[in-house]
Picture 1 (tube, rainbow, N blue to C red):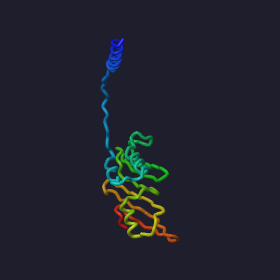
Picture 2 (tube, helix red, strand yellow):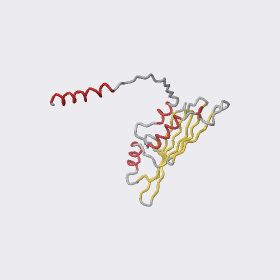
Picture 3 (cartoon, one colour):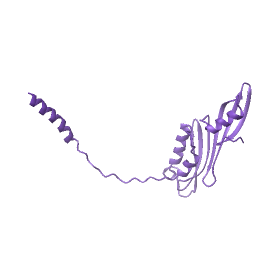
Length: 169
């Protein structure tokens, strides 16, 4: 009886190992195009931006003009609007799908640490109640980032403009 149980136990362990046949298949070749990597590299910050901002920027970078319903060989420039509740991006593409320029506007997003610290240093008793994040990207000129902030201290209201490094404009 002891030999029978040991034999069944060993047989139970060895049969499943033979049943797992790994099939190898050759997959088709995949080509990845990084058309708008320059846009994403320029507008991304070192800090974590708001998730909706990042998602919309990735949609803008991944958008393929040539596969859209608006594409025609006659035109050299395509202006496409992207909207979410937190903001919007107007992107201009060339006929190859490369982003030439964008105009971005977002409301109430996560501010960079440099902006928060600059406001706190200059206006210590004030709180930021609203913010607007403006970005202008141009393929040749680069990126211009600006924050419009509404500060409140009791009944007092103050509006300031700050760039991405925390310099007041």
